[in-house]
Length: 317
Image (cartoon, rainbow, N blue to C red; front, side, top):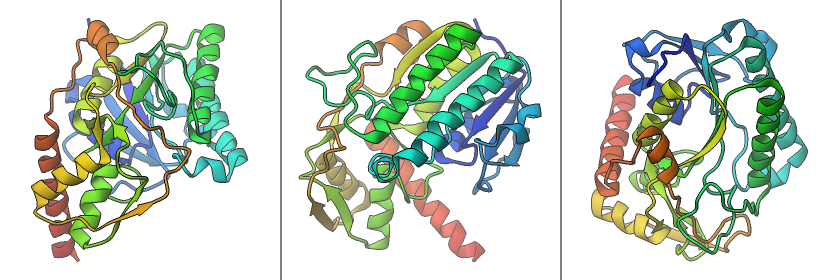
C-alpha cells in the first residue's frame, strides 16, 4: 500500500543522488522541494520542482517549507571518509547537530517520514561474514563512520521520544548519471580521469572489495520507501549483494572505454575497510525492491552519459 506525500523535501537536493531521485519521482507522487546551498547543475523542467538555495543546517530559514505529511529525504552531508578525521569538531557540528535540528523540526511538523542517508560501508567497518545484514555489529573504523552511527542513534532517540517515523538508508557505493566525476564516487571519478587522461590514484593494491550500485536503482528503493513507510524506525541496506574489487572496476572501465588507465598506487588507508558487500534481503521482504541493473550495462550507461554531458558543456561554452 502506498501513501502519496504532501511534499518531498530533499536536502542536498542539487547533488548526484537527489538528481537521480528527482527524475524517478512521478508527477502524482507529490510536490518536490530541493534544498541545497549550491545551485542545481541540471534543473528539471518536466516536474514541479522548487529549488531553494539554503544550507540544510539553517533550519529556521526554511522551516515553513516542512509541512505535515511530507517525506523528508536527508542526503546533505559535508563529510566523507578521509575528510572527517581532519576536523572532527566541525564534522559533529555540521552533520550530527545539523541533522538533529532538522529531525526535530520534522517532528514538530508531523512529517510522514524522515529518510536519512547513512552509510552502507563505513558504518559496518570490517566484518568477518559477507554479505552484511542490518543487525550485525556496527564497527566503524573511521571518524566518518562514527559520525554516521552517532547520527543514527540520535535519530532513534528522536523517534522514541517524539514519534518521528525514521528510515536509516545504508547505501553502498553509488555511481551513475548526474555525477561529473569529481569528489566522491569512485566509478564516476575513474571514468572522468580516464576521459581527461589523468592519473588515477588508488589507495592500496586495488583488492579492496565494494558493493557498487547504479544510482537509478538506489533511487527506486528510496521512492518505494517514501511511498510506503509511515511508522517506526527501520534500517535498510541498499546495494546489490555482489562485491567487486577496485581492480575489477578498472578492468571493466578499460573494456568499456577502450582507454588504458594510468594508475598510481598509494599506501592503504586505515579508514578504508577491506571488504564490504551488503545483504539487501530486508528491503526486498518489506518493500519488494531488488537491484535490477547489470554492472557492465550500468557502467556503459554512465560512461555514455558523461561523454554526452561533456559534449553539451563544450558546445554551450
